[in-house]
Image 1 (cartoon, helix red, strand yellow):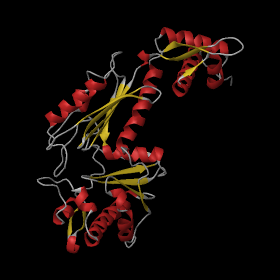
Image 2 (image 1 turned 120 degrees about the vertical axis):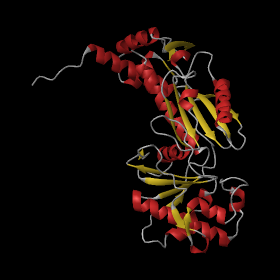
Image 3 (image 1 turned 90 degrees about the vertical axis):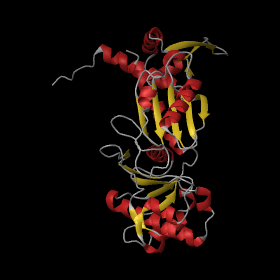
Image 4 (image 1 turned 45 degrees about the vertical axis):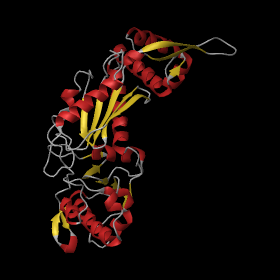
Length: 364
């Protein structure tokens, strides 16, 4: 059977994609350098450059090579190729970043939040943050959002569950960002994004459970490299799992901290400084409670190991690991490798990939 030859249109499309991705990686390249990095001939590169320039995706940077031989022209992505928004909505405030296709953070701003975090206040902070980083060239092509609250998988709306320590009510980031983004807006909770950052930048591998321990409590299960979000996107909400509390009493995980008087005033949020300053007896109770949650996670998800993240999760792996090791089913426990703005690191990586895909799609 005679193999079907690819069409000329397909070959041109592939050449254009190779050229764009080479420029995304390198920043600027001459046509000769593009031919080497993209693995295509110089005439083919020239044709691709003509098409991409006409499409407004590539420009002559104005820079020229120096030294002996023929002078070369450097090309790069056009400013109009587009940018992405990376956004974090958390108790500490709203962080908004604008990225280019090279992964450079062009602008960043933070808008503080007061408590309780009512939806209208969070919406105002989110809008103000995005206004501060918006580009004069035009709307962003894509946006990725992390939220310290459960997120509806279908709509991207933030959902308020009982005893959730942060947002009091519902919020719709997709609708709020519609005026600032021409393409998709992806929203997920902060623990899922932190788990993705751990998968990509740490040494967690492709099968693990990421347990977040901070003012709030959460879990993300990564299986075969993918975060399992559940039917409605609410997988990993561990606050109400039954575990062992003070005196060996069975109680919801979140209630352990109420019983130990480790909650912030008039809130279900955990008082992290008080917890970290607690004595060995209190930490032992907390270690046992966390171990009970880990045992339930292992029984249901069968991860290869457990990663502890969050402001106090990375501080108690030894206490938790010691309690967990006495249970019938246990796996290795270790602190998270990505500690600095872990959820935003996951958001930023996703926003960059989405932006690059959007630019590639815009070439036709």
